[in-house]
Image 1 (cartoon, helix red, strand yellow):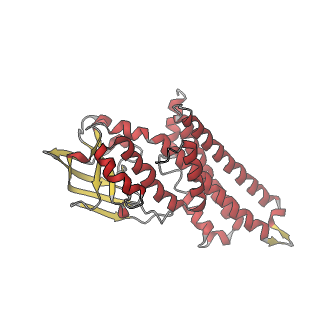
Image 2 (cartoon, rainbow, N blue to C red):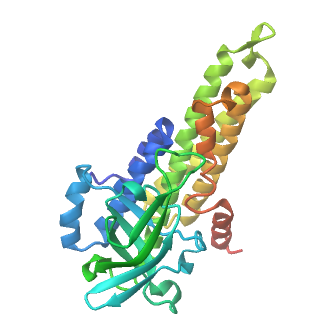
Image 3 (cartoon, one colour):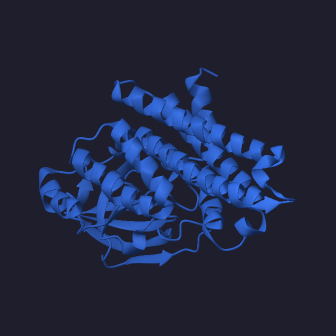
Length: 317
């Protein structure tokens, strides 16, 4: 509601990534992803009914796109929504749906025309208490404050007015959010790397071995220098992408590059941080948590492999 720029959001999400990866995920799921769908794609009646409660923190949302056989292949979903009079009836399964178990509403992608490819996909608002809807929390490696879930639809009936936009019109809506999602995942990883570097540096400057702090040994100080460079590369790529978006550019290659660079660097930084701390990092504690969280970055929101394909296509390859 504040009219924040992409740069504003990147700075804010970087700070959230620094302080807590999982809480950041909860915030983004409702306040950015869910709210964006309401702001740009919902009817006036839907916005009036839901946005005030969302802004007050009284309404939580989740985004249900991924399926067991279609993660990066968003057009390959199998969940069906069949028109039945003034309703739609939804059947299918979603997976890895962040915070579905605590959501009030979910934005669900479903095929309304199974023979039309990406032009046959529609988006729907589904009440998380709907009859026929089953939500099952999963057990992730990291980010345990924002759990992924399996979601099963068994003849879930929703009213026609809960469709977002036109039937078959979901694809432009999905694509519209990709730049923002990639930018903010990059910002998350940049902030996360800053925290890891801070913890590792603090440990190394206080830990002594053979009569010296271990930063006196190049084997350690060079790791910290590498962590600093990797973190700065992540931040520069992120803020460059944000500036390009705010300048009105297409910025697909910039946001995609930022997402790959920042998330992969984040995992490298986490690995170096754990190596510096040794057994102290490997045991239950903040460094171990940060390491586990960092592993998600190159997977979620578009795998590094798929995003390299996107970059290659934009390069004309």
